[in-house]
Image 1 (cartoon, one colour):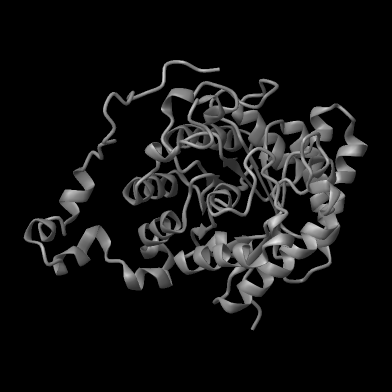
Image 2 (cartoon, helix red, strand yellow; image 1 turned 60 degrees about the horizontal axis):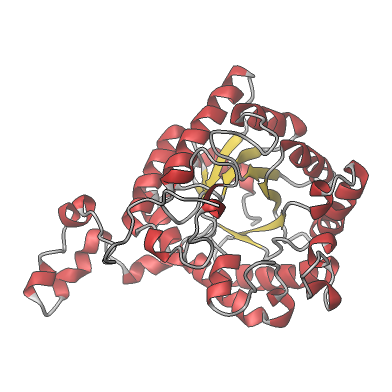
Length: 368
């Protein structure tokens, strides 16, 4: 019996995506921060496999091939040595092999082939050159039956989205597209609502946002996008994969959290709790978002929180929930009485976590 595709699943209810790859693998010693390129798919396949497995166990319905920033122009960008040893084709082939192997271990998991922004677009080399970079990636995905759909993500310009969607649609697979935008819109000042409409008109079956902003900012942005789509008479599915960090002070700044002096190597004090993620999941679902995952900072336990919050709608819990009881329930088995008293929803739902750092600013007031 063949598995249901992405669009069929979205029509039935929420789909849980996976989480952070480059950030998490950088912390584990497999990715170089700065270039953020995915040569680990060739150099350290077991490291990539392990993270795929963790996201799948946490409840992800989709595993994304580790192909972020794998275009040849990015691999060869000044200061990046990856392009001297690997090519876009090498990385995409290796990443597909890895993710397909892990997905085969799971239960009805979809595989996604991903594309990301090209330096060629930023260098104004034109549509033909930019689309050729996308085509190198898509050509690998298109001929693999195990790749169920394509995702164009982390896009800063809606025009580049349109060019990418055009190439991806030619592969004959469902296409999703997400932009790294907040309430101010794309890097050319195109408003979020117009971005959503243009992505949908270009042919994207799923549209939304990922990275750069926190869950609250993303909820505001997707609400604006949804309203514009409805006004235009368009009805693609909505998707959010937000940051795993709180950063409200950058809501109205283009390129979001990158302006924080903590980015990218000291963001841990801003990390979302699992309960922040549950609250986000419920709010996004009620807003009409049906594809929920995470971007930088989203660890497997965050994905588990998404899957657990939406378990009533999905009809199941993830495998990782076998070792986790909702709202700290397992703490009732602690040997310490004061810990046992925290085994309640009331405690965790009303908790305001402290930073524990003397003289730590609540919010940053100075940016680059």
